Image: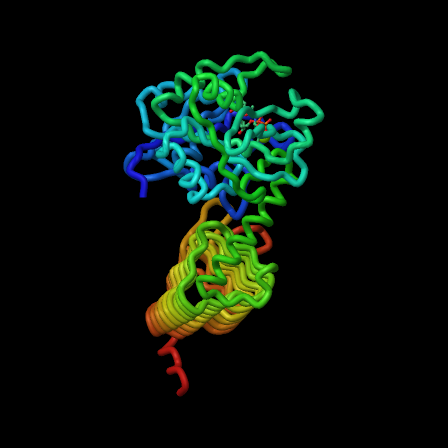
Length: 453
Ligand code: UD1
Ligand code: MG
């Protein structure tokens, strides 16, 4: 437990031209969350942990993402991109406020963990002025090399400035650093730009610290944790690393997956006890699965809460705003969106349930469609508890099906059906002149048949 205060500065002002995208680099997602969100979530949080993000000019959407993920963070704009040390100084105001530890991380290095931030801070407590996160690179090309003498870090040499001997070193700078907060500003302000690119390199902090007679150290981590993302290929590699982590965590939490390598999870997916996920399932952001939920193969789920013992798919698509109660059954080729299905509802085959509220134990027959869109606006469908909707029915919203009502197969329901009514409404036709709508047969008669009788 550290009681030291911290300021974490996340650098995200880069253009990311190599992504070949109109979207700022740090907004690209892995595991359903932006690169930036991953870093902001791993950074120290809570009392005494301040956060600042340095973004480029015209990066409004990046500022919005910062607000969404960490409303406590301050954003600073770096108007000219003159290097990583220059970028840190864009947040000078925040640094000047003072913190025991000053951490610097990159917005395009999303796999960093909270534990590593903590590990990097530890040497500061013991008197080091600077701790640098290092890793052994399979291919060090492009990275800054860490020059060490015994335990001590002497300098970081950027690839462009390195001699052939220095380029042979595989111990590289991950880009994450921790400074003694009382000296950080003085150190970073001393950094010049006498190098091949004429940039202010944050990596020169090491020699500055050494010239001041202070200590700089290296903390090593795995390459997988510090992969920087500059291209779509690297984005895909990072996705694989993150998916492997999420699958492992899910298995450890007791989720059953017989082919975990085929299941895609999101960073925020939550599971109850005894959840089963069959092969080839894709889970997007905002999904929770309660105890005993079973997700059958080839299902695609985004922003949905799945109740206890619910069964989904195979081949189901749950879209944002889906909320399923206990024991709900969603079968093959069923799509739901902005739909609340209470306990025991069954939608077993070939249906679309959108903008809908479905009461407990209602049975939605094969091929039922809630016609929520009239070409201009979306409307809601309400289906009462225990209602039975016959196969191949269209429920034209806004419409209410009463509790316990029985809708005959092939109905096109355009007006509310009372509780317990038996409704058969068929063959809606538009006359040849394109005028008024006619119904050939509309019946609302008697009581719905009692189930099982
Ligand atoms: C940097 C390190 C290098 C390290 C590597 C790890 C420096 C000088 N070099 O090199 O030692 O091995 O990361 O991935 O620090 N940024 C700004 N403003 C700027 C310049 C950069 O905000 O003016 C941001 C970028 O958006 C990015 C980060 O800083 O998030 C790193 O910049 P980048 O240009 O990718 O540095 P590298 O050449 O990769
Ligand atoms: Mg980089």
